[in-house]
Length: 347
Image 1 (spheres, rainbow, N blue to C red):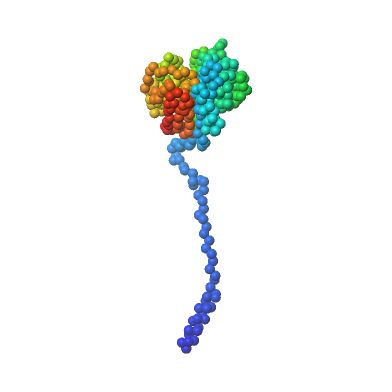
Image 2 (cartoon, rainbow, N blue to C red):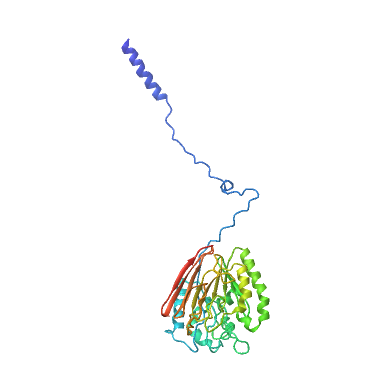
């Protein structure tokens, strides 16, 4: 009897195993992804939405320089020739996007004939040059008025400057213009106009102001390119106080950077307001007139000037970022080989 019961248990287990279903694979389903609506942050009713981030893109890299070529000079070993080689190399290898000319390109007069010497050294940079003119050497009504023609490809060579190409037209040396690079708006202010047509200079103040305001409203950072420096140490050339209406206008719009030539040396200021005071949101001026002409010694030391020298020739390199920050470096090419570098935050 015991053996029979054991045999019946074994049989039952065997039959149960044969009738059990075979195991099924486990399938895992991913949780549904969040929809775009649920991923988008919301702004509380009545709250001011945050400003949009600066546009993406590379920084704007350029060199700036003024007061460049002595009369008849075509020597590659001259101060001007070394500056030309330095900047053209940067344009060719892509480390520079453009060259910003700060006036007084060819001494003593910027006629088509005289600019032939400048073109020998600087011609390869012309197609990527944005330019501003200075009085006397670049433009002097009735004496010389050929720089704008040269930059438009109307004399010496048919190559057009970046100014002409960008604007799609001829640019008069005594009129203002603007261009944009990334998130930066550049106003090119013809300081020579104050000398030859002050009523026109006064009238264009409102025009330039409107341009700066529109650019600022669009979220652009603001820069000015000109020949004559306002924030400068005294030399044998007096401070151009006639520029004060434009300085007031720049300050009202919170221009960040002013690039100028004119003094035959190098100076960098603190961020400064229109009353010569160092302030956090001020305009920082870089006066770079170390292109190749003999330098001028300083005879004053204003508090707003943070760095200066008059024994070195070279060019300024700047990198402007979309968020309003920037870096700078003065690249010496001859003389005492002094330099200057630094950065400024978005602020």
